[in-house]
Amino acid sequence: VQLQASGGGLVQAGDSLRLACAASRRTFNSYAMGWFRQAPGKEREFVAAINWSGGNTDYADSVKGRFTISRDNAKNTVYLQMNSLKPEDTAVYYCAARVWGEIQSFEYAYDYWGQGTQVTVSS
Image (cartoon, rainbow, N blue to C red):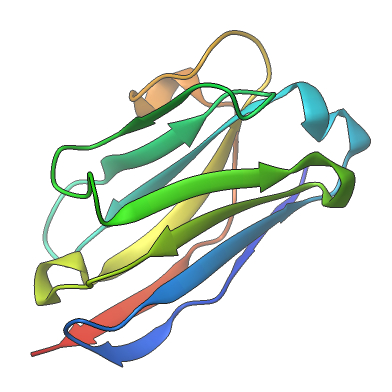
């Protein structure tokens, strides 16, 4: 499975961005998907996850109420809507696919990773 993340950019604090992650395989419909991020000098951390149907989601405390994960299985795409962005949201954002099982917040639970897209939030 190939994952292609897009939508990153340079924005100001308070702005919004929507990231997208397109999967190359139709079996995407059965995968749990996650978004992670890695800021300079820090370890990669969990941001959000969504199950195969979109009926179950999970968020890191730091983004709850500001970010929304969703998916369009007809388009093999998962989205991350990011509102009220803060400078501390600056990071490379990665999407990941989990072939079996429900959503997880641990990196090792995911089988495939995209290449990452840079999000920079200026103050």
